[in-house]
Length: 454
Image (cartoon, rainbow, N blue to C red; front, side, top):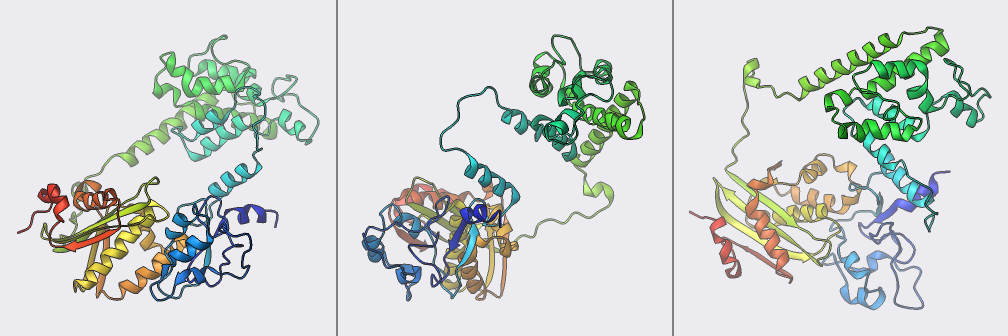
């Protein structure tokens, strides 16, 4: 219940039939965050539902009704929503992810946005966000990345940090007896730690590194050291040194074992070397034929429909294109412009749906499709994980029944240039139209060379 305001702030009502979504109360307009529609009128019908704005025979929006009731700024957003052509109950999706599923990462971002003050506080000095961001780019294990992030963020359980959080009263360093065991003292300033850094391949100097500033020391390890000509292969071992300094301190605290600095350093370098070798081995390409494994070539499809979409946030229209290829030759093609949908991925899905409709009208019984959008392939393989596309998925399932077989594969963008050209030219046309034929329209004759026919 404590997290309910956060969840509600990111929910958007997805429109299926529209029978459960109130126009003026439910957050169905696809802004971030989602919100109810804005009215032009001073009085509003509280029982007006979204299905009242949809023509039930065509499953299209009643444009005249929208213009009479809605704020003009809301109309393009509404037209980008695809009402379901089948009876599909309205649902919910999470606004801060592409799929509509909640993730911890997006929830954390939303929580920070909600708690951020409306006006920025006075500048207090350098922040640590750049250091925190750089942590996740380190060439090391996820565990060590998280450990470095804890150090920079102040979450490491040193005596000083525990005392600050009212867990015990003793701030002193257990190893050297210093007045406070801060994070910087533990990692860089305590005599055993200083010895480890002095023995390490990373050059140390009293005025250069390490210093009595935790953030300076991490800045040096992240960036500054390279400016002094220290090689990447040397600097990249520091996460393991930090980790084993922490492990050595804990062995002294809880097991009363005093580990020699040289032994700690050797263990750190040994683990760093082992990880790098394993990681390099995983990245090295292996020729399957060298292992005696037969190499399976991708199947050559005799007839395939290649499709693409063109979407831009500043345009009111999106473009869609497809080509039906038979043994490398274009047999049919289609291009059209439509009202801009919610996102580039929605446009890709709309291109697929339109291509399927065209294949059905052309009498194709086998549906072999190809797209250069990897997200579209993933969406179709894991449909339940994409609630934002509930209406499109319902339309896809109804069209899928018309094909005796259906497949869709990923192709590189460089091999999908014909559908890409058609989609971009359709969007650039700046008017609503649709063209399906065996050849490109006259105004696109300059692109004729891309579409050879036997």
